[in-house]
Length: 176
Image (tube, rainbow, N blue to C red; front, side, top):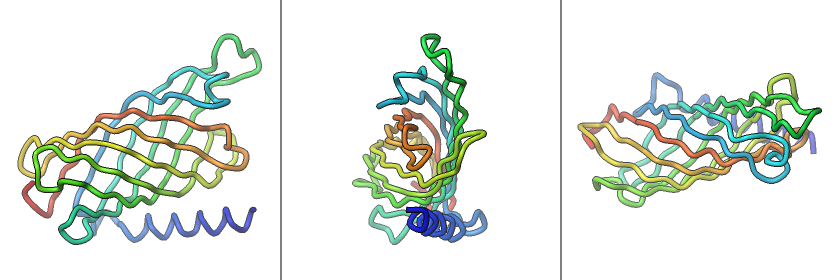
């Protein structure tokens, strides 16, 4: 299992490096609520999360690749006397597809993998999937609303959450 996790982390790092800020066509940032699910919800409250990243369009049909980072925090429930606040971070490479890239409203899907870390804990393989919608708000600018699944493996297998975020992206390469 450790070899598989190491291979996935190396692959995620390679994806992140391939989308360097110097080659990026767009940047994005957002934030919102981080809703714990599964065993994580039994011990922790809804918290906050922020995200940011860079991306590159692949052709002109709505496909893109991106590198993204996350940071968030969830306080322990008062009923869990042995629990501490959880600060988490993630670095992921992702592939997305917009169903209507040239329209004013554009739904999209996204999937990715990389690393998920808990402050003062182990860094393990992490994975994500998202559904969202983008709204054009100007030349190159877009507001997005997104629901996502973000989870880890190994020591972080209980860190399962649903980030609900709102953010803004700006595409430098084309007028939207």
